[in-house]
Amino acid sequence: MATRAKARDWAYEDEAGRRMATECFDRVPESVAEARQLATEAMAKWQMEAIADRAELVTSELATNAVLHARRAAFRVTLRGLGDHAVRIEVYDFSRTMPALFVAGAHQVHGRGLALVDAVSQCWGTDRLPWGKRVWAHVEAPTAYESPVPVQPDETPIWATRKSQAVYMGVVLVAMGSLAYGMRSR
Image (cartoon, rainbow, N blue to C red; front, side):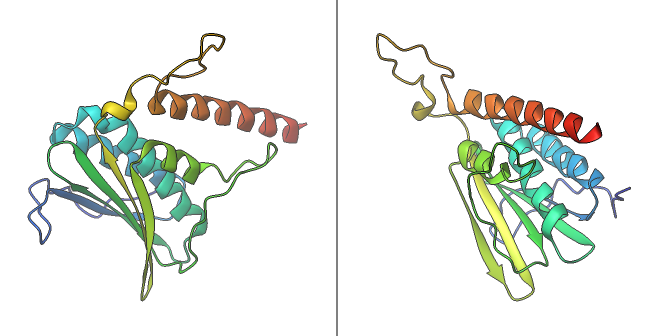
């Protein structure tokens, strides 16, 4: 089970004076939930409820990638407040292999995390470091682009906003994973 080295210090600020929450996690599956909890607590403490769902999803997906692909026994998650309505989520690990966004096949269990990050964040990227990498994403409060998608008179929308698209994809992925797992159990 993942362990926490210390209590969180919510008053911590980075070199630019931005609010910051950071924590190291063991590279075990249970750490994904703990990393997501770090994001949940940070968004609540910083009164950023408008982006809490997105920040939690991005943190979860990036932490999952670190658990699956990092080389060493630990990884770090850092959240930096960018003003009152945005956050930068960073995950550091010791792997120098850069992640790639690709389309997963219908029968693949993994490979959709970065597509979700891409869908719910304003931008994301990777920085190569001497000892590994940092994968980051910027999540901002909803803006005008979040307005409903224009619908042609003869069309019925499946979803109206990027957030609902991400939720829909999450539901589809869980259903596909359940079906794939059920088929393997037989």
